[in-house]
Image (cartoon, rainbow, N blue to C red; front, side, top):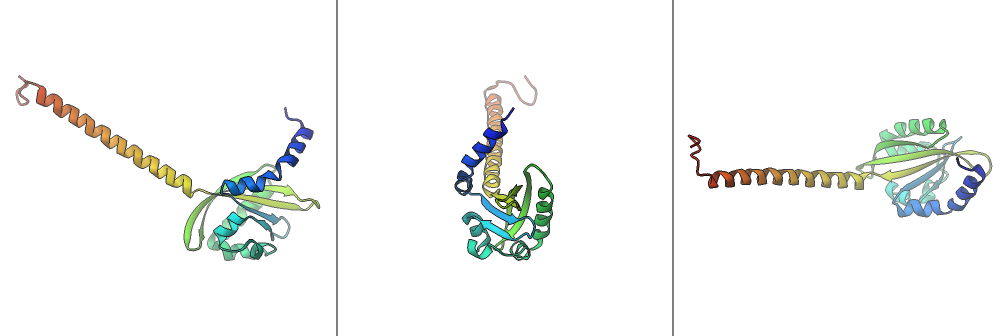
Length: 172
């Protein structure tokens, strides 16, 4: 059973660490005003992915989403609206085109209450490309091991056949 007072104190202590931790982990961070949808905060990682300076993104209206994400903007908006109704964080995978490159992200969204009581929507973006590359490398390595194992079995059979005094045709 957790202690709500201790939890709130711990959250307050850890809050300053979150932006550094996200940047260190290579995660993008966007915080939007829940009512208007305008961008209130964008970290450097996310700004880099979007090919814009963070200052150019802050304060921009929701129409910016269509400009930045193209066809994926509608799916992103739907996911944001769904997350806004949930008490807990929600995660979804999104495929978006950024700078002409198709990318995959896992986005964790959480409805928050701002210091003035307004509701905010925080979204932490995690680039799935390194995970996908690692999965592909592991799959390729496994295929190579399986092929090597089959080759070893074949060599073993050939070696046993060569050592066997039996006639293959007659079995004698």
